[in-house]
Image 1 (cartoon, helix red, strand yellow):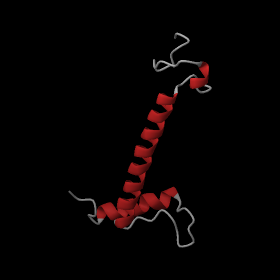
Image 2 (image 1 turned 120 degrees about the horizontal axis):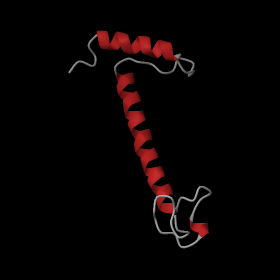
Image 3 (image 1 turned 180 degrees about the horizontal axis):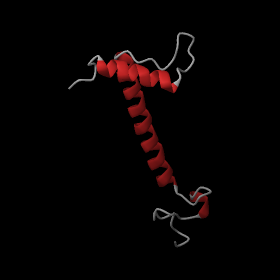
Length: 84
């Protein structure tokens, strides 16, 4: 890798334009964009499950155990909430 490129091959003018792993600002923007899209998809999926009756938090705002979430998903599926 030439000194003027990040590991992804983007041109960088100085070492200050790269982070500790050698990635440039363009790489960081790409990572942030992917993270925002991923976070948005996770939120949309959680809202869809919650609208079908699956709870991820109890009444006190504490996380529900994963096994309980799975049981809820099975019950919702068996009830036909996710039927095509």
